[in-house]
Length: 306
Image (cartoon, rainbow, N blue to C red; front, side, top):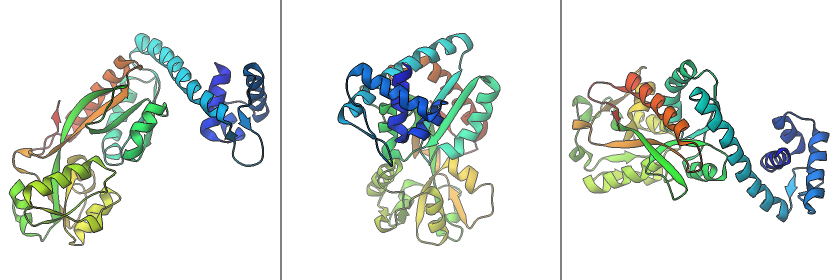
């Protein structure tokens, strides 16, 4: 198992020194362990030379299998810890840039108070890469917009979050307390690029209600979208989580208006591999729901708990 872990670390780092540091051993010790593993298997795993480490064909195939074995072994350890203490060990959580920065600060505070032995490693990942990294074992669980899933994955819906309509403060709709889907007719709508689940949702809304999605000005982040709205380039759908953090709490020439009866929402959930310990992530989901309920329930723009 030790040699399997070392090979996985080397395949991820592509550098002996960095892999050794990640595993807490010296570089010569790592090199010796890899050589011993090669002797044991009777195949060459690594092409040695200057620069980044390159795995042989056999090395790549074995490293992929090793990652699965290491992941299953880690699952046994995590399962034992969670059965004893509720939630412990290390969880590698991936999240999209449109969710994590605006929700996880509330979650982390509660997790640390409730489960002090838990170590949560949080990484923002481009939406197109989240599922692949989860399936490959680079992440244990992902926090993402639904739908998402597959035969090898488990999905747990957490809450539905309203999308608000953002506009310049001098826009004709800014004088309304609420907007409706019919207000989208003939509006120039700014959106994130196609890699984001929100893009597909917003494009469908525009097609249904007569809005014109500005494909020449697709934003790379919610901040970029907000700034373009402030320059009068169009209106945009912004999640309530983001608006609460970046618009409500600061002076801005951008205002947001809820849709009447909060009819336009996105669904947020946790996704993990079926082989993992479901109880651990169900407990994590309880904390996330608590954070959403306590910090994001706001008047006519509620977060709807599933």
